[in-house]
Image (tube, rainbow, N blue to C red; front, side, top):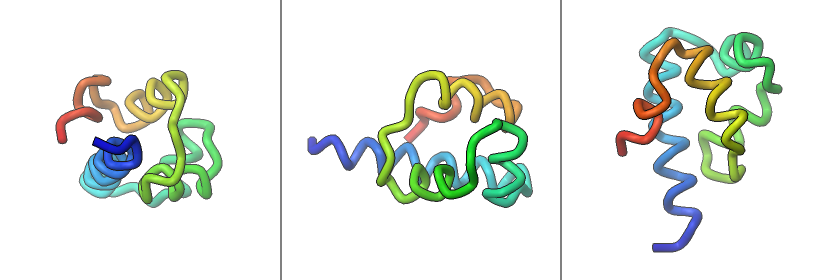
Length: 71
């Protein structure tokens, strides 16, 4: 499986969780201390997100880390 498929799946999952939390990319970025354009790039599967940022995103979304990996 090409690596970009994992990025796209992660990004789609992030988008689902963000929308179910009723947050804009900007709101999520603010809560996670991550720039909104980076959030968009992650959601589109363009960015290889770090473990540190995955942790920040999970905390900002108030979900366990594993919730981000349910594809």
